[in-house]
Length: 609
Image (tube, rainbow, N blue to C red; front, side, top):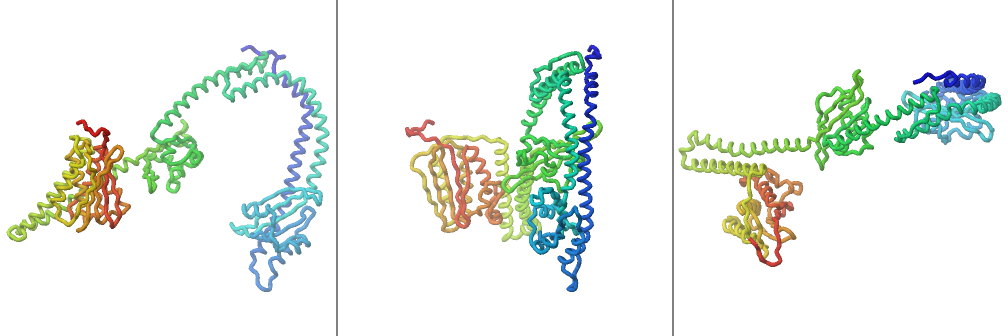
């Protein structure tokens, strides 16, 4: 880069400008002096008013808080006495107002008669009492044709506002002094401005053109346009600056391209992450959050951004931001509602510079709802199985101990004890078999041996078997279409389903009750229903009867030999056939079990097997 000649040096140009503009320095100093004088006059006036307000505020507070006897004058009289001595040329009026905005006293005699006892309507008084801070405004009094300052100071008793002190002062003298000084400086400024314009027009043209060009380039760069270049007008410092500016433009273009590519990569990573990611600044306020985190927290970005991270996570009472910085283990978070469970686990990572200065916090949210649900179901399943096995084992142990102690010699009770032991053994065998069935279904280790059967004939044969073998006084009612309904089912497994449902209906049906069987043809399926007239199921438990080990009436179900797995097995088998199963029950009136099976209607009445 060549050395700039002395006559081309922008430094020399600026020196020449400085020599000519130095003549204007005195005027600039004068303007500065005028401004400072104005501020000083206003400040001194306000300080004077504040000092006198503080003096009278003390006396007013004492009078308002004073405990009075019947011989003491009223608070209004005492305050009027205090304000009477508080008068000067600068202060027009002083009023005392209580916390309910009622005027207690005024330093103006005429206002004592007309305003005392009235409610103050000045907004400045209300703002001072509500905000518990001094208020001040300056307005122009049209009647007096001068400016007036209103100041209001709250009167505090500890942390309680007991009233306010309203002061109206004459600030017109200050403005008159300022106006006089401004008139003097304005004349000098006008002359200086004229000279500056004339000189500036000729000198500024030497360097304003390249500066304007660079300004336009900077504006284009701000809009993302890096293709434009600054024109180089000469070899002086301004020309060298233009060359450097063009080089900077190229570097910014490359950096912007790299940054944009990295930003898109980061945005793509965050957008496609299943885990939630939250980033904060060094004060713990959220600065970045991805959609997964918003979905987990059930919030929108406008409710999250710039808010404290511990508030967003709902742990502000337990942990501060500093605690989260020191957090080394993941933290469980429960966002469950009555309708939907939501268990999250938050992991915290600190972002910091090489010097150790903390830049912020990265929080990764993982949805543990399903894991927690599975773990809960596992614990409940183990507990239920243990309970179901413990009951018959306890019974068997009691009877076997009795037999071992000599009861086997008694021909009257020994057979009964052995019968109970055999019954409980069979109950455990049924439970284990049901568990094995469910286990095979869960692991998909079973196959359906399907065949085409007429469902009406198949269904009626099962009903006939129960009707022939039932021992209680229960009537069967059937509504079955007369036409053949051929469906593809595993007859063994479907027999288990229907057996379980009919057995439950018979268990809970009272003597003289009716069990109703119905088969209906729908658009693409057949719907089967089996209804009893038993005790029914509470509405809150209807949807749970297909859960494993669930019993609406646990004591009665165990007494009848149930394992609590029959309907759960039925649900799995119906699902394996591509159907659905559900229940409808009215407590005290009975329960109806419905299930569907896929069925295709043929208009020609022929069936190809």
